[in-house]
Picture (cartoon, rainbow, N blue to C red):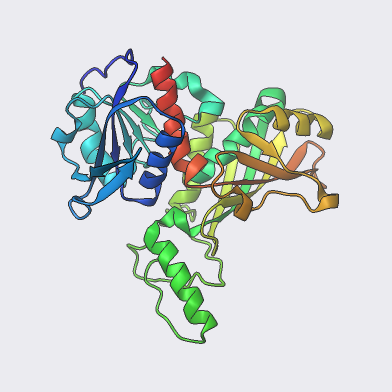
Length: 349
């Protein structure tokens, strides 16, 4: 791969690959909201979506088909168009001098590619060779909350169960959830055709249901989504000794992932200190007042960039363990906002 450009400009030529998708749309919103210093913006997609027109900062831009030549002159490329597209085009973009922030799983576990959550390991950005990987949405929100506990006490073990929104499976999954809900309420029958995995033959209803499968099953009985959480957590935290187990479930929520997280700390802890550490942690908002029924909820996290933590309590069976409830917008902190944060760090350098 070619040498990436040095980030020494005041304004940048930016490309968004997958601009017409749910995450791509949020990337554009974040770039606008954060007033990212853009000289020229390219909107790229598959041939199917090319020709569409999208508004950005009052200007209508035409979406172009993403090709290797699209990245000529591009400084920063944000990818969210699927792993196959990233595997094909990211090396081509790097060859042409772009720094690529990739939101797929294509490069996450590559030892040469930094896997970055800025609140946790922003220093890794400097180690890039043209590619920086954006972690999985469910992993991102968990490690943001775990980082201050890891720094203070150390972490030995994590057991996480997720309750993930259908938007994590794309726009078709959102449409299917709404359609099935309408049909169910009307007493009509319907045939599921997207979830749990669009490429697999068996489909299950999502309306009024919980599906304990996100992505394909691996030989060990865990899904790829679950193994992402296991492996990515260790890489981001920089500690292979952390034992992680995950169960990932799709539920009929449109936006916002929720997680029940059991954390075994390496040392004794004070519960008040834990709340204080979390409340001061960057990107974290503590909502933890059981007497007032205050705790994080997906419906309130939607549209917010922060990670919300509540139900903070000592485990009843292990005095060095905590139970947490962690909620965040999977399209923002879980994807688009995390990617734009990385871009801001690049620009600041």
